[in-house]
Length: 248
Image (tube, rainbow, N blue to C red; front, top):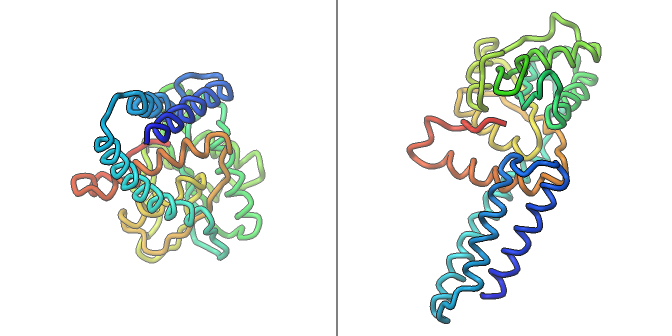
């Protein structure tokens, strides 16, 4: 087990360095997890624990891995499901805007929505996202401008510009449709689609589908691990009424 903890610790630190080099930032989303996890594993790997202590740690690690893989399997399966039918509404969940510039994650969501609309042009589009720190305009306004520049008719775009979380995206978007009878396809990055659909169902959507957008492969492991904690938290009894609260 000593070597297990040392190897995992080193891999976590190396992945954090890769994220820093790629993004040119030391504090990108959830990146802090990797040096923290790496440090804990290295401490366990270097500590003078007894054989029995390492056996107990090994059992705990195995249990954690089983839970992690169970949740990740559900997330990854959801990443493969894509709506291939006409829906009444397409709901694009907001992501960070820097100033007025659309980030890579948000552009991928918008492009996935455009691909869907090219096949099913009758759907109305709800762009959902408020204005956060570092954003000169709301995410909804940024998304609407992008869609307009790509030829989507203005009358088809509905702006929901108050939300600050996944839960609020879907709760506030309900005001523009009948969640019990209208069908809606949610557009977000693939790693996030399982949690988004689960949140929509908890918010009362009865006919909900998914349009998963691609994600940056360098950050995919980072986001998948983050989603594990976010999804697991949704099943905690005291979090069920506050699900989906993490901002994308």
